[in-house]
Length: 119
Image (cartoon, rainbow, N blue to C red):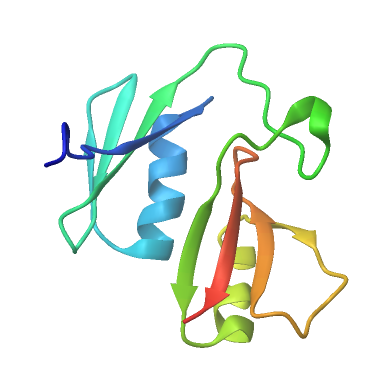
């Protein structure tokens, strides 16, 4: 029997509303703005949350002195189409060397790494 149930994944960032908007455009869902804390209620019932972090320093992938700490894997049907969309929304590519892999690595507008993965 599990001791707990995952409530949400929370990302520190300089602008919670802006980052929630980015992920709402990528994943769908509804943004619930509470000021310093913003929830993104996803269509499948999960919550991705964003917390204001003054002095936020983004991770730098793949450097060990500024570790990514965690990343999100986002399953997509068409890597090329999804890449075009996330780049238009403000994501930045972090790894463009091997286009034959089943995943691609990006940073969201606050610098958190995430992967688009062929679903």
